[in-house]
Image (cartoon, rainbow over all chains, first blue to last red; front, side):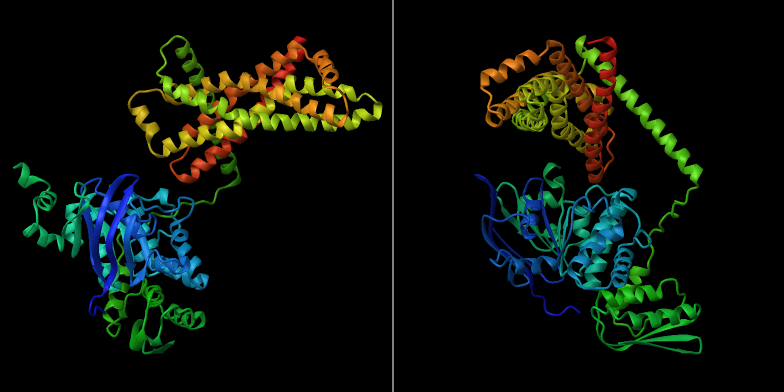
Length: 255
Length: 365
């Protein structure tokens, strides 16, 4: 299934700020197809903001973003909608609609963007829930299941349309180590089976080392990328003290 | 294309060509029926001629393989087989479905118990709010001045515009409708008395109350409801700070202070609305209209209107805060709390008006 890897996301000279305050200056990076790419960095460095820019929720002050070869901020908004239907998003809290059951949450994008019969949609909903280990939970409401299960259901919804890219905002936040580990395994399995590209914002080191095969480190002070590559290799050969401090939880610095 | 063949206790499912976005119900149903008829039969998946597949193919295979003991998937493409295996792995079984079938008596019993619990909770909330007010008077309440001032701002000058407009229009409508009837008897000038009495006695207070219920009461329910969702109310409780002191008291005090003034404003604007009809439509001079308005105005009516406004202030704030504090934990419940707060405050305003009217009539006011 995996052939020569092409660039799925290309970001060049991206800048973003709030008023006079610049959060990112001339950031450039690319995400290859089938990668599990992690955007890491300390609190306040702009990880989530970068994710919002990539998902089109915020517009950058400058620079260019290409997704699957197409410019994200192209003048024709209908083409932009096409790009976004190829992207699934898993929000930090799961962001499931509380007034809908899990099945209704997952069926929503299928009803909106496909011509499938209701029977097929039902089958697909059961499959997506089973893939994330929630088989049989179709008729449960988000408030009736745990935080970890909410995130899994959120992932099932993100996968509903078989997107090429899935963005995840702090997927391990607020989860116990076992749930977090199970979620990491799920990312790996879905990445291997479906070839989905994952872009994950995280500062949870165990998760980063478990899943990522590529990453960037955002630095809040210089507002730029201070390191990029496989996190395990970055740990072995850190390009600078900032990356080393982050990947060793500051233990080498404070020892 | 999809087909099946049954032989020697085996069901062979043949998948051919492109099965992307596969939505052929008839072909799938035929395979499902064959599998259902031969529950113990081994299923052999023949995908030698399968060229393309997607999630719909996986969904079909998952449904077919679920609960089967023997499934031969050796000819499936590796990724497809892996996905079906991943879906079939059960991490956690859902709890047994709750039995929602209730007997009639059970429903009545549960409904009565819920009503009784809600009633007790409401009474306790009123008690708590009154105790908080006593603590405020005795200077022992934990209420931040800034919260009170913020609440005061929200229900004072910010509400002037909308109350003025609505009351002006109500006065105008009242005079217009009254004038049509009074013209028949040639006593149009008494329109001024009608508007003056109606507005000062009750209409001014009711209009101010309805506007403030939709505007401020709903906002109290939504604000406190969102705090409940974000666990801010729990944080207050665990800090030992009474929620009625901290959240309810500033809002109740602010509305009880401003509502009499807003009622006065409403009275005035209603009478101005009436005067517009009296002067423009009926042709009276401003002096003439005012003369009859002055005759009809009674201090007792005016004070009763103010008293109603004061009581409405308490009811609106109480309902808004009550439904906010007792809001559920999701976005939907904030909407429900807001709706309930507005409906309950308007219903209680009317009920209390009825009670007050009977008491006042009995007292001979």
